[in-house]
Image (cartoon, rainbow, N blue to C red; front, side):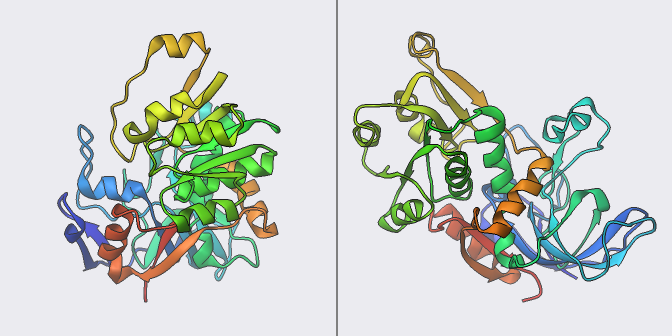
Amino acid sequence: MQAVQVHEHGGPEVLKIVDLPEPTPGPGEVLCRVLAVSVNHLDLWVRRGMPGMPLPLPMIPGCDGTGEVVELGDGVTSFKVGDRVVLEPGYSSGASAHDLAGNDHLSSDYRIRGEHSDGLDCELVVMPERHLTLLPEGLDPVAAAALPLVFLTAWGMVISRAELKAGETVLVLGGASGVGSAAIQIAKDLGARVVATAGSDEKLALVKELGADHAIDHRDEAWPKAVRTALEGGACDVVVEHVGPATWEGSMRCLARNGRLVTCGGTTGSKVTLLLPHLFIKNISVLGSTMGPRSALAPIFERAASGIFKPVLDHALPLSEVQTAHELLEARKVNGKLVLLPGS
């Protein structure tokens, strides 16, 4: 089968298409044909190399996607050949206290495909039965591949950590990104007022289409003031941050008293500064968040099937064009998500 591999860290040129033996499922495992696999910022970090976090190489990147069941291992009862499934990004043993409490993403043995082990940028993949979810009928598997990782991440941020409530105001940074576009939709479904930032006229139009009440151009250095103006001098109960140093100071200034800033990463760097008086005088909470519980996949895909949540798919590319996909994402020329199509 064809697969993408990273043998050394570097630019998009280190992504190579290789031929590998076809895998076979063992007991409790399912062999799936990969129908579509999304491209995430995590893929960029894996390819470049994470400082202080050595990764096993060679590595097949690709965290999440959709597939079709082609063979069942002994003992598999939840699926049949021909079923279309969600290829879940995270996995754990299922035995920890966090697992048993429904918070598998907090388990010490929680791992992500395409980062800690081979991922889904390939034609065929073997997955444990318990890490597959049946894809609801009527959902296009190519578009649906854009959903799992970003919606799980946004769910973890907005619902699990920030505990956003109906009637509150949330600011979503980078609202046209994968996580940003998911956060807008989750917040609107909760009944919140949403302010979203974006960096082009096309992206500003997209965040409005997704339901944002106000769209703010973050290319303007005065964007925090524009947020306040849009809210008629008000501030935000929650800020969804995943940009980092480039927006951090402005994000903190947009918070109301008792506000919560929740972050899942930093695409512009890892170091930010905090003014402690600002933090304690306004009673602000800064919350970290990583992924989200797999139990959220069911409500996410139920809402997607009913049209409440919409995958934001920029476009799909053949797996052979993985280098181009990485270049586009790094250049911020993507609205929502890119998806790769193995076998095309």
